[in-house]
Every structure is written in C-alpha cells, then in structure tokens.
Image 1 (tube, rainbow, N blue to C red):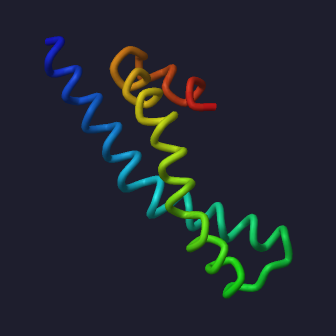
Image 2: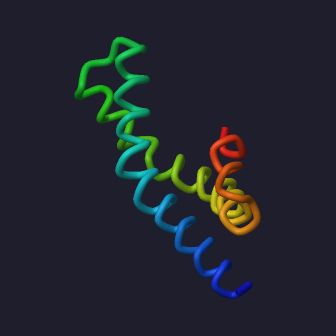
Length: 84
C-alpha cells in the first residue's frame, strides 16, 4: 500500500544517511582524498574531523529529500542510475 511504501522509503533513506554515509562513505572519501593529496593518516583524520559536521549537514539537505523520492518513487532497477 501507499503508506507501506512511504515507511519503507523513510527507513531506506534514514539507514543510508545515518549509517552508510557516515560509517562507510565518509571514511573512504577522506582516506582516498587524503592519499591523493599526499596527506598522512593524522592529517587526513584532522581534515575529516574539521569537515565532518559541515559535510553531513550539507549532504542531508540535498540527499535526504533526493533519497526519499528515489526510494519512494523509482523501481529497483533505476536506483543506481538515479544516484549516479
């Protein structure tokens, strides 16, 4: 039903934004970009700590509505192309 679809979309959105992004994506992002910029582990970690909150808020402003619409409206086969 429509209400179940909305709840499922909300669950997927919250899981993605509150678990996957901060625990998987951001560590990979800061690790890889730190490596590319020739930063050592301490400098990469300091950069991550300095930018984490700002990036999370900016990310949530865009991706929470975008992910919710994605999970609510798009068929599974279009999920990855939409995100890319």
